[in-house]
Image 1: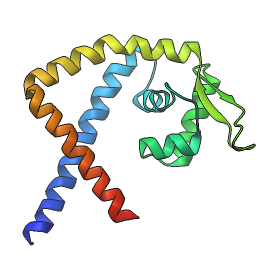
Image 2 (image 1 turned 60 degrees about the horizontal axis):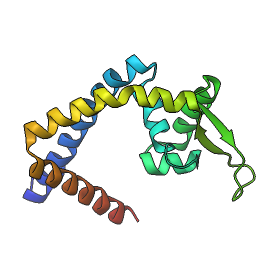
Image 3 (image 1 turned 30 degrees about the vertical axis):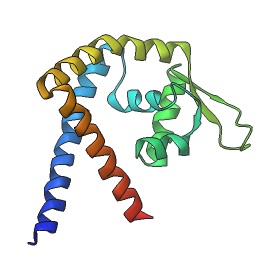
Length: 146
């Protein structure tokens, strides 16, 4: 395999492993708040502004059908609600309820503790560089997919 092929494979395998590690951490952080990692992910996408299901899917890199299933569960559990969408009559906006916001707030202390420990392990400059590299990799893949 060429060096470029090995770089792609190594990057993909590392990101797959990181995804699994982050999902495991997210499940552990979300469980005490009565959430799953997927519920937390969808609620997190709408904390600052309501979005249609398709918008959540785009932001989070998930399938629209998967987000729809989770959104319906969140609404059923009283953690989110559908609001009218002035831009699209049929594509309602998903918005967290006060109960949904409270559940997310219960995660914050453990999330902050883990963030502090991770940055202490990496060092602040390396943590910033890592985030920048991951964002650049994601942008490059988006560009190649267009």
